[in-house]
Image 1 (cartoon, rainbow, N blue to C red):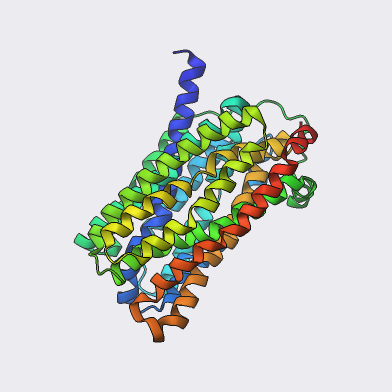
Image 2 (tube, rainbow, N blue to C red):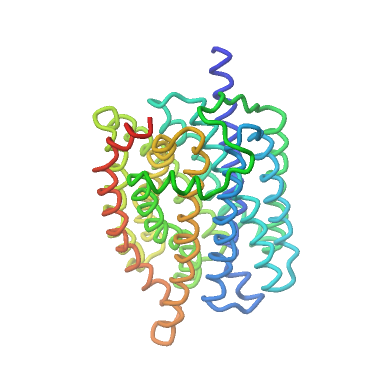
Length: 418
């Protein structure tokens, strides 16, 4: 293996670990939500705020200034990634020490602030190191941390929470991220090429916003990912709660089996989405948009059949298909976004996508489901969440429309950004 190949593998592996523990620390609260709700006496709406806006709003808003900082020619993006990983790990540990709902909400804000910085800088490093014809697959490999993090968060969180309580789960699961931060700092280097345009140190976000706005394909891509994340994030947050409440499955079992289903199916979807997009993208670049469009259209009926099932084993089996399709978008989208803007705006472009995914998807999705479920609770009782999750996924027709519109502008947009 060549030295360049070894560096590429090291880069992708460590960024995979960053992504993994980013998701572990973000998602562990989902499997612990019922325990937290019982101890702190929370309604579905307050739980929706805790799992949604408390994290997502600050995660999204801080992503923009951190991404602009990462795009500066003088910024060491490796040191930036190592620092933010250490921050969100410490804040996750602090979650286990919270004595009230308000304290827990505050430290979840801290988790969001820490996690905001890792993804845009990671995508920018990959965009500079990996050739375009292999980039969707490379980003999918790095992004395997998403399903792996969901798997570990649910399995470890469920097992530790069942045995020792939710506070211990937060404390224990925070530790590996500190070692990952150290490894990133010691192993990786940021050897970026000189930028085509040297940005002044005071370059501000509005300049980046103008660049993004001029790319109609990127704007449509942002709309697609933001609206699709309403469904996927809502499902991720509330599926464990539904299995515990509606099907009366013990927390440890839910964490194990839902973690395996979500994680392994997500891994398959992540790899398949990147590979299919790269293959079809050679035929026509717009196919990078068609792949996630088809995925979001196929998924909704499987969610409905899953939550309509009377046996939780059948429900889990049916969730395999939409859990696979949910991450088809990852490789195509995050490989495409940096190609739609000049190189000095790569981190910023991905940060804008993450901003809207989190503000609209992670911010509104869990909260909206919680509000509707509370409204239905007098009539449906513990089945209210189940009813909502049976219907909610059909909102995917909206992102499918945006992906289709983006595909029609994609080829021309690549030429103008070159």
